[in-house]
Length: 206
Picture 1 (cartoon, rainbow, N blue to C red):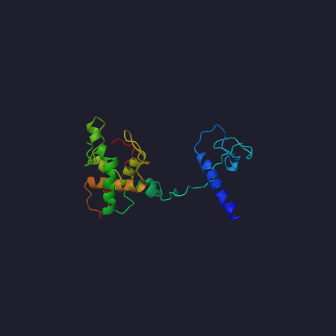
Picture 2 (picture 1 turned 90 degrees about the vertical axis):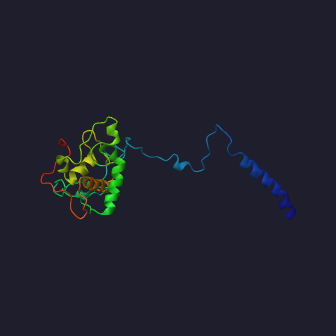
Picture 3 (picture 1 turned 30 degrees about the horizontal axis):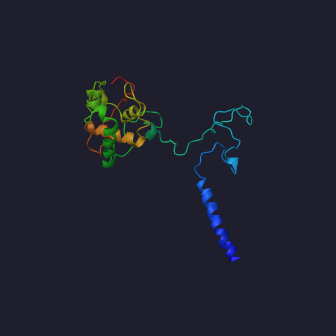
């Protein structure tokens, strides 16, 4: 019995080598699927017709009131720059801390400085190359913009400036607003931004 077992070992080793040697060989034959159910399962593809629902559409609309995870933006002040009544905010909803100002300065340098300049006077490197000059932050009319106005310009863009909503998340937009106020001369972080009696609209002529 022991001798027979010993004599079969070389045969098993040879079969193992032959099977391993077949891997990587080119073949025109379709692959063998021991369980093809997952590859060939019945399913509806996106935007295709279907027979299950009365309207003939396989793709269903979300249930009314459905909100994607992480997309519940109930705080209008933070996400839209307006009050619960829809009025443009005159003041940054975030506390003006050294950390917020540092973040705003960093983000401003990445997304804004090339046009508006590091000092906010509208003489960034892009402008020096011939692009249309943006307004000077120290212009009295721009100084009168509310924090909510500036936030919404960053969010939606205006004239030659495109929207930065995709590149800059809401908290960083408010940080940039705080940095703009610093460039305008509001250096005391314990005081609110420059007050404004009439909130200028982002689309107003600057």
